[in-house]
Length: 159
Image (tube, rainbow, N blue to C red; front, side, top):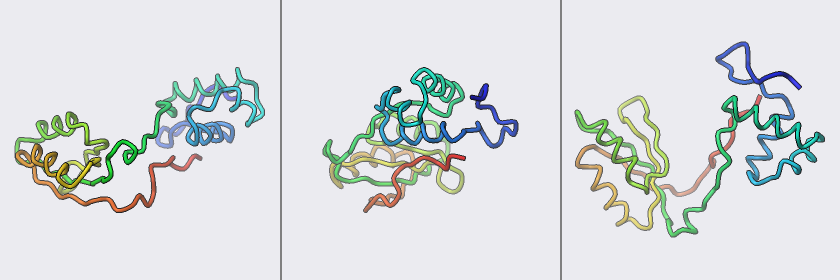
């Protein structure tokens, strides 16, 4: 096995071989898969796989082993995408509001006319009104209700 995951061309990120890619894909499918099961599936020893996982973690390729919750099972039957444009001088305040309101489950700071694009989980349309009221004092918003998830969050191409 190679000594590290460093790529000489820093713009391309770490180099993943076929086994690394397979491990990442298996963990993406089920983050609870044991090291022993991973090792069996790639034909290696458990200590060798554990070493590879440690290197993937240290290089930043694997950031976390996580849980995928279904918001509907928790009563959040709607989701919305909200584009947010803070009023002049309100950028930091709006950013803090987004971080403190738990229904904002994802948010990206972006370029362009809007400063933020956020995903909000909702129990109802009136729930949305209450959330937006907290933000619209300091920002303009544009909201779209999510009808379906055409592409769920997925791994980027693993080269």
